[in-house]
Amino acid sequence: MSASPADSREIDDLERLLIERACGRLVTSFSHHVDHGQAARIADLFAEDGEFTAPGVVTLRGRDELREGLGRRQEKSLRAARHVCSNLLIDVIGRDHAEGVVYVAIYRHEFGEGEDPTGPAPLGPPLMLGEYRDRFVPTDRGWRFARREVRVAFRSRR
Image (cartoon, rainbow, N blue to C red):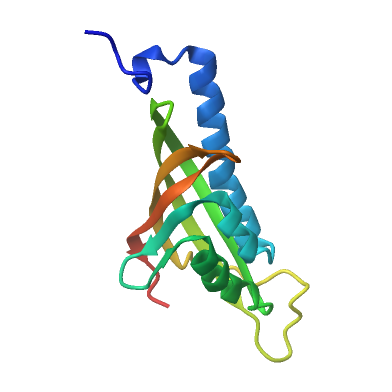
């Protein structure tokens, strides 16, 4: 019995590395956009029918809903945030599917009256520590998130 074209055994090392790199770049771009006032651009990192979910908080489906929902984050100009990601692991399942997980620590500060939002924010403990669980698919625009789920392991008491 021959393997299907999507079978990961048919993917050579270079192709696997290129897929892993493309998916890893999506992970990094997501955090960069949200942390630098470009949250509405995150929708472009998703497949047309992509989904972002933080269970119990929000589920956004499709690029239009993603652009609108994440665009509201962009309006919070008095917020400083950093999504610090580590321990990235991407598994290439086949030419049409990859999965990943990355740990995320989120630091955030809401600037109040009298604080300079252009200066460094005070540093406290992370708001939360958890992980993103990702599913990636190839599209005509390259690899994109099919689904991104936030899973919280620790939450700040503040």
